[in-house]
Image (cartoon, rainbow, N blue to C red):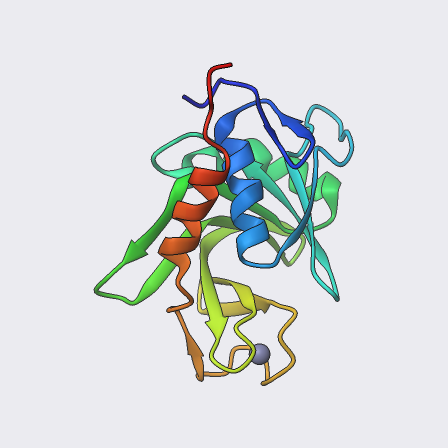
Length: 176
Ligand SMILES: [Zn+2]
């Protein structure tokens, strides 16, 4: 499944899974560049640009994306920006009302720390933000300016499961 080169929006992706993530980023309003540049020993899959900062995204077709975190830990230091690691799909945690997107590698006191990454949607403008949470510290990367960062009036309910389904449909492989 994941090894089939897939064309989406005139970009040729190495795998359908990468293309599906690109389509999902479109669905949630994140602007992306595929394989933006080379770093020593690592070509990041995506650069995702928010208004005020940008992050790198690495797609790992694993059940637990955090397993791949060590791989990019040193790369994050070189990249000088946060790295989001995503897996086979986002995961809705019904009980906790969390929509988990993967693991986030962020810099704390000069070292890389791997924390949980969630998607949250503003209930006013419906922009979708990345929330990273771990070790008692919560951060948010967002284009939403409706409220103070990490304000409580946000929703996990932005139709995100439907958007993932749309992304999968948009990147189906059709035999020619
Ligand atoms: Zn907003």
